[in-house]
Image (cartoon, rainbow, N blue to C red; front, side, top):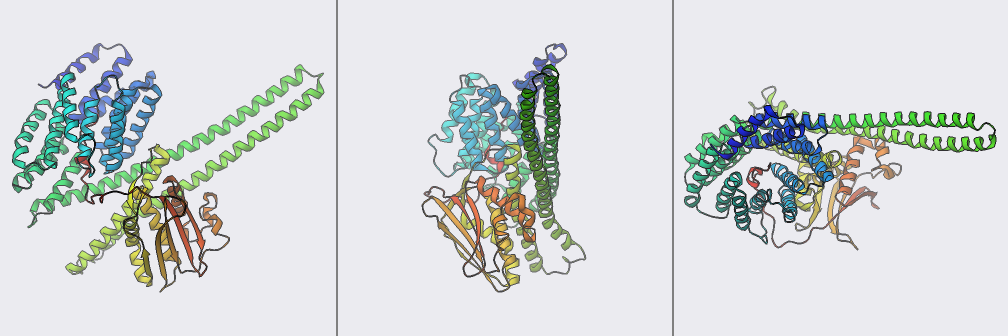
Length: 628
């Protein structure tokens, strides 16, 4: 039996004789980590026991270790909210403890979570940060895995790194051999065959090596890596033997589903469907994968929506508790102050003048304290109301595309349409749903920045592409009102931003302009470089009636959001916060010749030698197993 299975057996045998609680926490957390490759249920059982015991005995290092493992569990269970929350809590504890090896490991794991969401640029940035941290570690136990994750991520990026993926893999194998770590050796072989195939090696060269890797993962009991290796083997067979590719996609999907790796199961079927949909004629398995993906996507979105709302409610509850604690502290301070005054009056009754001045000073100070606390309380109430409105916006936008789909299914509308009409309706619903989900991604990412504490990592975004995507979402309204939209947007301007948040901003500005532009009017969109800075300025000018002078100063004022007309006040406030988070400015003014203009600036991205590829790989192709 493989070394890892022997380790699991040996650790379980030690549990009944344990008397030291901190040692129990360490063994439970280690078992949770080892089971990440074999059984997610066992992974959760041991890591949750480690977390409960660590909190009871105030073992901060054990608590952070358990949170690190649980983050992987919740990511594989398609719950990114808890995954991000636990991984950030783990990092914060290790930073307070100044545990450099664990800071490096958790930083790498944040890159893995980002790769699951397809954030390849941000994921690569985290891997490079972990790589730099590993260069300064006295012990190199985690460095092989950092090198392998960085190698896999670099193999999908267009630029040529200073150190090639194969050089990183060679160093990882050397270190793993020196440590005697068989798990890292197997991961290195899997990474090498996959990277060789992605780099242009023929299937005949890499398929025998992949078979050998699968034999080793099976022997070691690495269920996760066995499923991942089957998926890559299917990709290798695609150019030469479609039947074999379909067979191994099925093997990978079945194994991931059976062992509870929901994230890997979903990604395997996504790759299979993407590959099979390019084959003509379309294989019957493609329709099967399509139906399963649709069902899993629906369940995943509903679960994420429920979990996301629960998470927001938890944040609001925490704010309420903080407000209650502030009021209690105010009462305590008032009681203490009154007690001090009484003691001074009794002890120094002859010093009337002194007591009088002292009483006036304390009274003034108390009024100032109460005034500050009342202001803080009002601010918390305002934030609570703002977040409740935010939840309403999210709920509405999530229901809209689903309602459109349900409406088409009622009354036999689909049956009465021709094939071309059905295809057109399906394309429109798909476009609206995809664009709505992109906008929701922007809101969720913005909420993560404000509640979870995730660091903002900008990437290069093509302005013309994101504005045209926002325009596509509003095109139906423009066509119905006969509004001419003129764009003067150079196709080569890129800005440093977060694409989902920028899409949300452009959608709302364009929707505002269309709503206030009369039938037959026009909207002009222009992009220029702002004078005296390295920023790009976007201007959306309409031919409507303009903005009321009383309303114009309060468009982006959080405390005055209810004064905005048409229900757009909260969305404009969110746009304002998003633009500021992306290091830009946003404002509005009335045009001299009528109508209004909304403008914002963002930092220009540095010029690049070539375009970034549009078809990026799926998240499962950009990383290997991350928990150690």
